[in-house]
Length: 235
Picture 1 (spheres, helix red, strand yellow):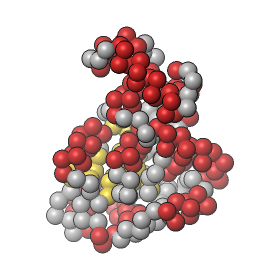
Picture 2 (picture 1 turned 45 degrees about the vertical axis):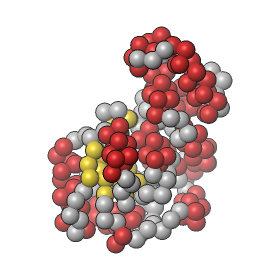
Picture 3 (picture 1 turned 90 degrees about the horizontal axis):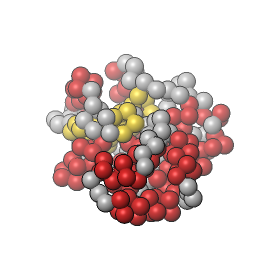
């Protein structure tokens, strides 16, 4: 994401204060990473409780049951969501909450996609404790934070297209997202019907809705669009 694109988003985004962040949700399936991050946040920000979820589905369910957190730290690759799917889905659930992506994947294309999809920042899992805390504080104060190695200029011309695609994919329901993921895996309607325990006619209805929402005419085009923003990491 270019500096100009970040500035445009800032003008339309809420400006939270790090001091106002009292409840954080960490979404990460690695227990040691999750526990270490939670402990760091408690010590560094004086938090008494940090919420955790081991999958995207668990995070969504927790948000429904316990309400929106003040901030989210989201692992790029989860058991049920790899690539941009996590940020696209959570941004729909939490339109005003700063979401930080955390990953060992520091490719410019992935960072650009995450930022275009609505992430407040993208940080490396290899950051020191001091750098991690500083990055989070800056994000929660409203700044967009990316790794030093990130070169947005190389992908800047595609930012708006990625952002528009991310917005379209964000309109899909959870069931439609599951179906699209299976389409990307090459599954036929009958296989999708069996795997999700729904009627094949229902699958067809969902696919029609998916195509309409993402402006695709064929399944292959839908897969290409998902691949272009690495929605499921590797379709």
